[in-house]
Image 1 (tube, one colour):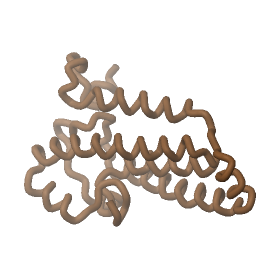
Image 2 (cartoon, one colour; image 1 turned 90 degrees about the vertical axis):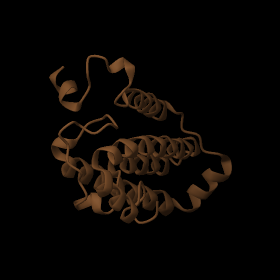
Image 3 (tube, helix red, strand yellow; image 1 turned 180 degrees about the horizontal axis):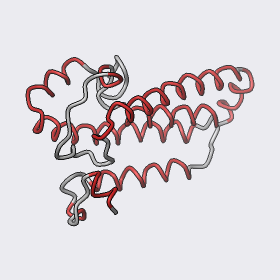
Image 4 (cartoon, one colour; image 1 turned 90 degrees about the horizontal axis):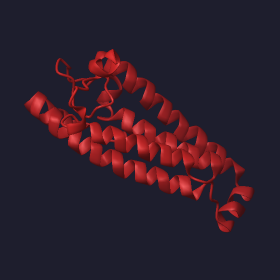
Length: 171
């Protein structure tokens, strides 16, 4: 229970003041992604049989990006890491390392991992699931950025204007 307190959860977590419902939604969506059946339309299957290299290349490229974002994001956040979108009370704004390339590397990393899995399984259902994860994390990041802007004011505005949100150098 101390870990939950360290992350910023409070005894009135059920009120959702720090984004607890975003964490619950993320858990449900992630579980739903894992439970999705592999679905490969016939045309997709024919493409895979002709171009096995596409499957392996997509898996490798998107998987590598995911690992870099997830490990870099976790390491650079350090003590600031929390599953809640609300920043910890004594947190610092991290803008170096992977955070100099992308504002939400952990969210982006999960999306890239989902895309890599979709390629590995060659599953249209999982690629669509990855798009849904992207939409969810985009909305979660929007909410988190309101709290970050309130906490770090001008510094966050400058940071947001220089660094992309979920996809390095693109978005």
